[in-house]
Image 1 (cartoon, protein in one colour):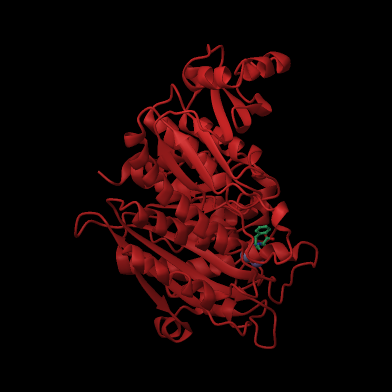
Image 2: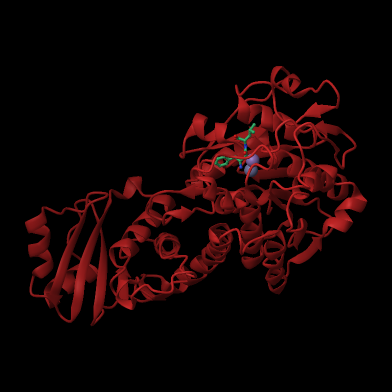
Length: 489
Ligand code: BES
Ligand code: MN
Ligand code: ZN
């Protein structure tokens, strides 16, 4: 992780200097000092590029003098339209532009301690890279930035503000690592193993294997897993930071470490993407790390159902009927609609055993979700308006947008089966994300619940200011914010 240190304002003698310039600002503080030390080089660069601090604009003055490798000025627009998210983006933008520098200093003159911490968070999030499997990359081609000094007027206040954000960033990175891992490495047992270090943060971690789940009667989850030589796992994580005896909040993740579709096999093109079919589970693990890392005053539980969906001589067939842990039976029409089968058993277990205040599940559940919302919003389905509204608000705060989708009896009846209590897909493709959500709703037992279909947002094909392309860890910051805003009182 990028090493971020906060210091009192002082002109650096080397490396890159980043100035954050508001629209129409006059040169004061570090800006004026740097301009003077470089004999007016900054003023000349601004004039030459017509840079006036407009939001999204920047000016890059290379080797301006005074020992500095560059001065990068980034426009932060008008004070009135700044918020945490925009400042994070600026931090991210700075890091993207400074990848070739070894050390850099960001001046945050005029910003509050909290705002300086937001800039630092954005820088941290953007500096992530998954390079575990690159053995031949030339040293010269790697991003070099390892240390970022943030100059803040109130450095003493910015430090603790950043520490809480950094714990969340650690959770985000854990999720990004898990989701990025290839599927030959990250099978269910390996993913369960990677939950164990959360114990060092004070999280209680339990791991259940196929025998335990068989005893409980997890017929749906184990039906999906039976075609793979890699055994299933369920991991239950507990963070007890809240008052003793207070009902926990619960997060449940779909963790299909690879989804071939099973006997209803997927086409070859793009199948490699199905390594990230465990992103819901990856989010839950990162979230638990974030909550524990910042000592959140909440009782939270995280449950992940981990399986690999493979075709084989022992795989589940279309037409099989399985008995779920709830006792309800399911006719498996399509073995590729496996996520809902995994969630059915884990969600029933969660509400039976822990009686949570609410449950939020995350799943890369349906391709139809991408058809509906593209890559800009995750789908939100809920039986509880307060929970839904709190989630929508948290998404606006963190920039992980949600769009509420409908539920209803007319959709629900489409998953009735002729020979069992339900089937795992509706008759046609219409409303495929909704009928999938209806299936899950049959396992929530009336408890307050929300389902986030993150199929379109778990992985990004291109960089955004705070999320390098690849695994986004969508949901970690969102659910951390949900907890912070409503459940730590
Ligand atoms: N993991 C997939 C959904 C998915 C597809 C996520 C593409 C991300 C990108 C899920 O298990 C699946 O296969 N769903 C099927 C459901 C269908 C058989 C009703 C789908 O969406 O095609
Ligand atoms: Mn599938
Ligand atoms: Zn899947």
